[in-house]
Structures are given as C-alpha cells and as structure tokens.
Image 1 (cartoon, rainbow, N blue to C red):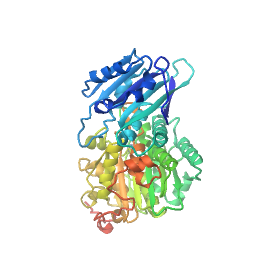
Image 2 (cartoon, protein in one colour):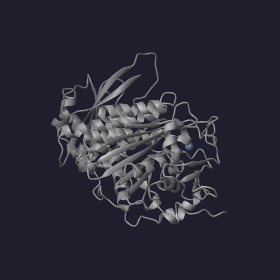
Image 3 (cartoon, rainbow, N blue to C red):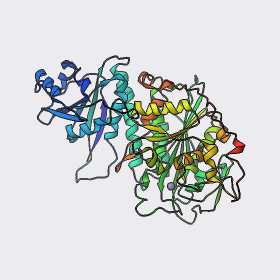
Image 4 (cartoon, rainbow, N blue to C red):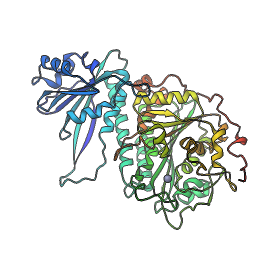
Length: 528
Ligand SMILES: [Zn+2]
C-alpha cells in the first residue's frame, strides 16, 4: 500500500491531468469567483476555459456535488456554505468526502482548494486528516510513497503570502498525521517505551533536552497516579516533559496529555466488545506531543511545556486493586474504586506537576477521558471544562476555526465534586452516580489536583476528546489544529496570529472561578 506524502505548495506549479490527476474543490460561491488563470495551469490543454465555466455553472451542491472536467483525471467539486452556529463556517468537513469521489488515491495527485484566507487553515487540516500514514497492509507489493500536492487559491482579502500559508500548513499537516499515526499504532508497536522514543525524537528535532521520569523513579518522586496505573506492565510508565523557554517569554503555558497506550480497564477489566480500540487511549498525549512540535516549529513567544503522562493499564500481579489508595503528586490521597478510571489518575499527576513545578499560568489537559463525552457532545465536538469563561469561548471558537470542534461542559465543582466522597481517603477515583454530569465530574477530578485545587489562580482548560479522536477505525489527529489555533496569539506565525480567537488574552486570569479549596477538594467525607 502506498503511503501518501502531503506537500503544501508554496507557489503556483503547473501540472497536466494526463500525468497528475487534479481535484479543484471549494464552496460554490468561491468557485464562481475563481479566475481562469488560477486553475488553468492544472487543466490546460485538455480543459478549456469554456468547459471550466460550464462545469462550475452545472454544480448544484446539496450539500456537495462534483463534475468531471476531463475523463476521471480532472474534477471540480463544490459544497454549500450552509452551516449552523456550532459548526465550522469554512464547511471544510465536506472536503474529504469530495476528494474521495474526485481522486483515485493511486498515483501522484494535485488538490486545489478555493477558499477565503480565514478558511485556509481548516481546509488544509481537513485534508491532512484524510491521509493516515500508519498501515501494516502488505497487498503483496513493496511499500511505496506517492505525493499529493495541495495548493490554495485565496478569494478576497489576503494578509499572508503563499509561502507563509504553505509553511504553516505543512507543519500542521505533518503533526496531525503524526498524532494519528501514534494513535493508530497498536500497543505491541506503540508501548510506553516506544512513545518515550517518539517524544525524544521530537525533542531532538526541536533541539530540546527532554525530562523523562520513568518506572520506580515515578514512585520515589511521588507520582502515585502514573506509577499506580502503569506498574503492572512490562513497559514502565513514564512522565515526559518537553520545554520550550524563549528568553522573551512573559508567561508559562503547560499542556498535559493522557497517554494510556493500552487500556484493558485493569482489574476492573473491560469486556471483549469494549476493549478493542483501546490502543486509542493515548490520543490526548499524541495530540499534545504533535501540537507542541508544530507550535514550536512555527515559533512561540511564551514558555510552553508538553507534559506526557504515559502508562499501560494492564492486568497482572502488580496491578492496582480496587480499594487500594494512591497518593498523587498533589499530595492528595485517592481510594481506587474503579481501575478503569485511570486517565484522571495520570493526568492528576500531570496537572499537579504543571502547577507546582512548572508554575504554569495556563494549564490545558487533553484526554480520551470518558465514553460519556460522546453521549453529551457527540462524535465531532470534544467537551471543554474550564474555570475561565473567556477561555471557554476561545476554545469553542478555535474549534470552529480549525475544524477540531469543541463544546462546553458544566463547570460547577461545588455541586459535583461530592460524587467522589471517600470514607478513608481525600477522594475516590470514580463517581457515585454515573448519571450526574459524568464528563464534568471526571474532568473535575483532574482539576482537584492543581495546586490550590479549584482555587488555582491560573487558567485551567480540560478537553475530553474521547469520541472525536477517531472516526470509524481511524485516528483523526484531533487536537493538533485546535491547539495551534487556540494559542495562535502567542505564535510568531502570521497565519496562526491571523486566525487565533481574539476574545481571550494569553495572560487571562479566571473571573470568579475560584471555589474555596477547603470546601470542596479536601472536604472531609461524610460517612454515609
Ligand atoms: Zn479506562
């Protein structure tokens, strides 16, 4: 099977449909505004200007439509711009469907996207999600690589040139494909040892010296969550920290990712129908690592840390038992009542480290945390839980801009945190009532391990992306585009600055979010 190399083209380059198939796609209203000279270099001499105009006029998308321009090697595809307020205005989600019907996927191909500058990023990222790179299919043929070039024709006002657009999108696409590859790889190939190597590879590429705390050292240093979850595996659990610290930085951002390379559920074991697919439980850490790579390569003005919490939740004599009590890095004790609620344990350690040791002003954690996320916000929108309203708005806006959609969850620790009451520890790790805002509660467990717990003075954003991390049997690389957009204000990259949501400042302080720590997270349990 051929692997696809995506190449974002920095300038116009001529191609001929007899050699390279071409698909020209865009919203119908934009396709109608394209000048012939912008598309002619991919179509002449086989297609004439009159044929192009006739084809575009003939399109009647509802919501998509295609028309052949020459044989099956040159096609135009259009889509409507009808979209509701919680969806992406670019309608970029139509692009993969159009490309599947316009291109054969067998040889070198060219994609020309016609859109506004504000939509370039979402469209480029939608294309990257269409081409996963991991496959062990042999098809009896040697592995080969084909190139798909992607070019933009920008309609309307422009602030970036093609070189800037192509450079940014190449980093985004490479990183989306990287995140998806890590998630698609099964645990016998992507175990914690291999994941640490992936992080070391990124560190090497960026000229960073990573911090790796692994195995027994985690226990010695007090990371009871990561150690407790991962200690039964042959491959030791690890905390990996990559840090980008430019001298001009005025604040510190930390991203924490859940990297459960396989989740059997532990002794609270999953069933034979619910365990397959659990190789994808590292989607948060994969997105954080890949987004860190892209954001640092594009240039970032602030301190940025990627904190990867890596463990395999397996079954064995050393596995954590229900009733065991672990002390997390926050110093808080957790009575385990469900070993399958392990993501919050590793991330509890991650956010505690980010607040205590890294002194981060803004902490974002990303995780395939709860099945309930899919029930509450669905397959396309991740769920966002945050102590800061500006960042809630910015995250959902970044979702609509980037195509990695997101929607808010209820943030109300004073009403919800009692779900974790324990008679013998500071908290249990799983709720008493699973029908009471389950995804919010799971997120709150993580937040309760911030320094100061719910009185943490900084911004905390939790993104539960359990469902959008994959589409069918394939990983989507969800999270990379979202983070690049949400933190675009801190970037030196012109396109990222241009598309970043404007309503939050990278120095935002939470308004009225603080809940007195003593009344919630460290509340003495009711003995009932
Ligand atoms: Zn689990």
